[in-house]
Length: 88
Image (tube, rainbow, N blue to C red; front, side, top):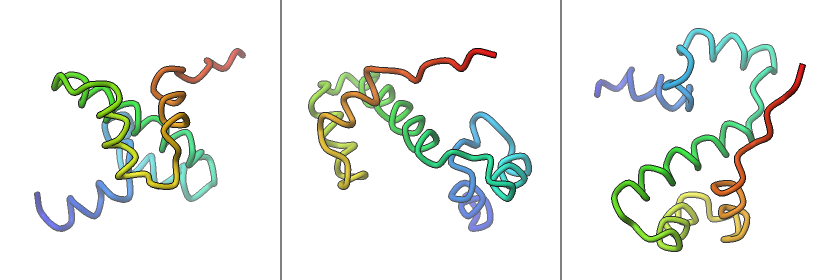
């Protein structure tokens, strides 16, 4: 991965969902909810760890290494309780 691509990936943590340009525009207008993005990334990483047959507790401990400010139960709630869908 080139250095520029690595910087873009860091700027857009949800590049698998939306393009960098759209993320930058939404973020510049204050329309990105940082905690929701963090929780989404945690769920994606948790699913990847579980796909590798890593035990649930070990997967959560691994995520705690990356997010040390979150408690075990907080991460457990994030991965086991998906966000409620907004109704319009």
